[in-house]
Length: 327
Image 1 (cartoon, rainbow, N blue to C red):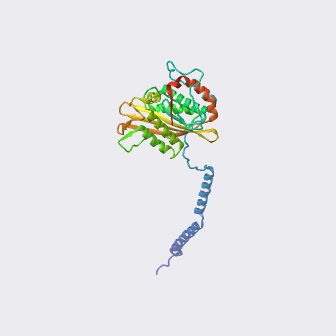
Image 2 (image 1 turned 90 degrees about the horizontal axis):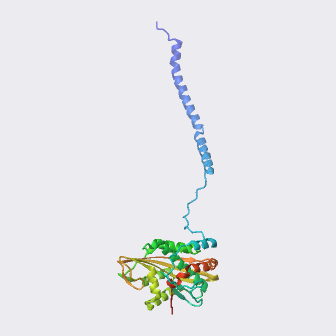
Image 3 (image 1 turned 180 degrees about the vertical axis):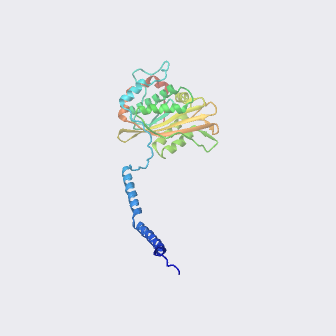
């Protein structure tokens, strides 16, 4: 007779599918629980909180602003006086005609006037006080003397202008200057005085008093031809193959103020220069560069410094300054 299967065997046969079913149920339950758990939400919330804390600690980011143009701190009167006392100048001219203790300059407030100050053609508009004309003339002479002493008679015009403007700044001149740019001439040949007028036309607005003064001054110089002014100008502006010179206009403005318009020029040739202003050059043989700027002055400081500056430059005045008669 066949034997009946044991209860144990029956149980083992039936338990296998039950275990599989229970395992599957556990998996389903575990997965459903896992789905119900807000793990990702908790992590996300935690990250948001941490990011918020980090943002609070982190300083606010500011957009970088363009760097301001470097400006030199305005000198005090004491600083300027000490500077003047220690400033080295060239040796005094032999047999100087300057009168000790007396200023040799003479100006008239009511009319426009022009003078040659070394390498500078300096013009004053009508209405500017005589005392201000004198201190400005002496200041520009002082700056030229100091630059010549520092740089010498070399062709280093860049270094010369650096010293020139530095001296004026130390005396309280606030100069807003544009860098040197090369003058572009459309024709094959050009004359320097006409190039100056072309530059002046761009610097000054049409019909401006300053432009009219520059034009009349250059016309007067051309009509004069040779004279004391030309001797001084050539000697102080020309250095071998290069020449540097300035054209400056000073005008009175409201409340006793002063407006100074300054143009600085640098002429460089392939050969030694014998003429500058009223001479026709071939554009391929010379280069003309120019810079322009405006100047504001502290009137009180100029009044206080005037006597000390005059004492410093008086021995050089008659050898560096000549009047330009303007009709």
